[in-house]
Image (cartoon, rainbow, N blue to C red; front, side, top):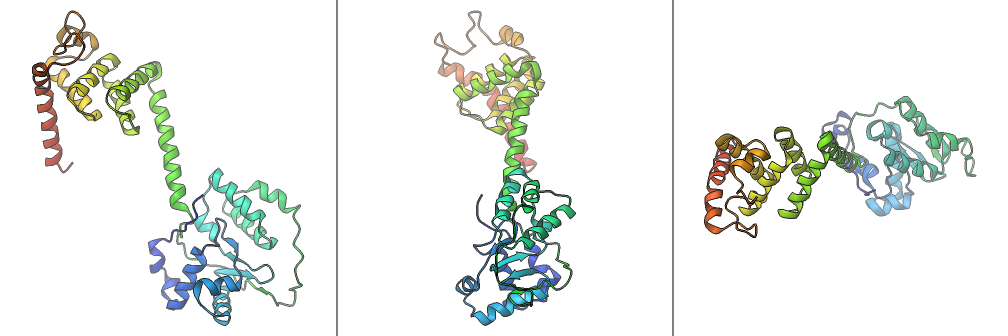
Length: 322
């Protein structure tokens, strides 16, 4: 999973952020986007690392951390040097198996178990579950760390949180793209499956297009599926693909234009119609020679009508801003 963080543009308009000093805004962004951050919002961040990243001295680092603890935005454990971004799950959790698996792995690496319990509890309150972590929590014990019961070492979490509802985009954009890709893959499968008995017809059209013109893409497949709805006789569509290739065109819209032209000007709506009105008695398409190649004169004649139709279509699209 790519290691980057997105910050929503409304971050700068949030009431809490507007009241921060420039130094605090910078530090808040740092806490959400530094190289140690994780999908779950709990990560190790020693003082010396903050000093190296930000250029602040130890005193300034401690002052800023304490300030954001008081703001209710973070909790910091000095014993394990871990930080938890409070309510990170509320605004950045992505309920997908891949992301859950990543979060489980991260949580199992967290040393300060109360952070894990707090995170899992927040997920349950939001209606999400990470069952694996919930089970392992009963087996995983708190690591041996110096006693902090006297208040030293662990910076307390002082009061309830009212974190602003900003989507800080914890790898959300990448996950959204992956979800869209999955949806497209699902739709593409539907394209091949939704035609039912004519699934083989779709594959024949696709394979012929791929071998004759170019490798088809998802948009082409949707168009092919649509053409099959209007022209169920797939052999007619294949003939239109042949003419498209003969005329040196490479887009599926040209195939559609040929079919429309045949239907409107010649009443050709099936392969049988095409055989009667376009094909020669020996089975060779009009305008083709005995080797199946289109002759120069016939190519000009055969392409004139459809070229004019396609050019008019382009003019209409431009006139309407298409």
